[in-house]
Length: 280
Image (cartoon, rainbow, N blue to C red; front, side, top):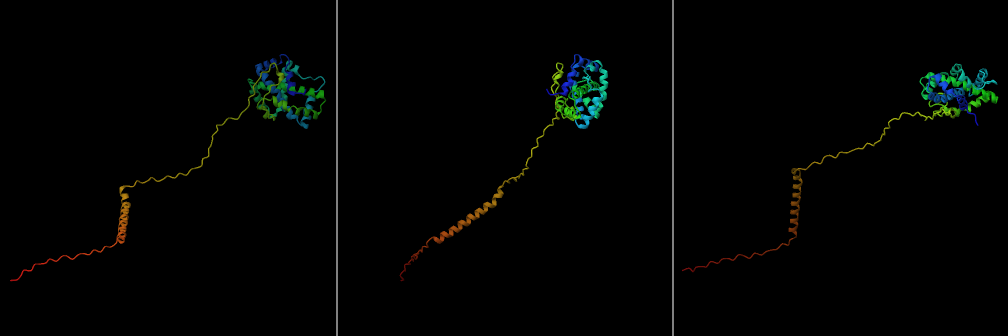
């Protein structure tokens, strides 16, 4: 089975009663601690991978593991120390956080506080401080068991990027350079793990405005028709009458030319004869 750094570190916190002790020390509800713990482990792992994912960084990290006693023959993961000497491990982890996160520590702490529903950022910082030495112990054991040099450690860290990105709380992936926004709680947190539906950040929905392009139409207003008065009809009627008269006169002349001329002989009027009276 392939090595999973997140699961390996998470399993160290599953010792009987350990989560309850941590919650009591933080003054937090156990459910909030259980929810935030995988995110704290993934955040620390992301910071370590970012620091040791190249040759020079892996060499520096290997030196820290050796000097911190994490690679010795009698240096198991410090789970027992978290339960028995909680404050000692916490102080050791606080010194690591600035080197792991640099100026990102405030943003990581704030994001983890919101994600876990913790009361204040101080609880998230303390949880990170506990996760850091635990993770260093797990890495030290791998280096010791596999007899790794700096190149082997670099390959181990880069091979964990997908596992880390899957376990990072929403929003922390971008801060830590992993781009992961999905939360997947490690299976090793069972039976204390509660199923949490991931919350995805979405851009505010803006009201869509449909802009319709309309082609301007040129409208032509017809001038109102003028009503013709009776006086307006007088001139046309007079012209029509003149034309009719002219046509009638012309036609009459044509008829006269066509009609045959009849010569009538008038008999002379009878002359009255006056009876002449015989003269005596």
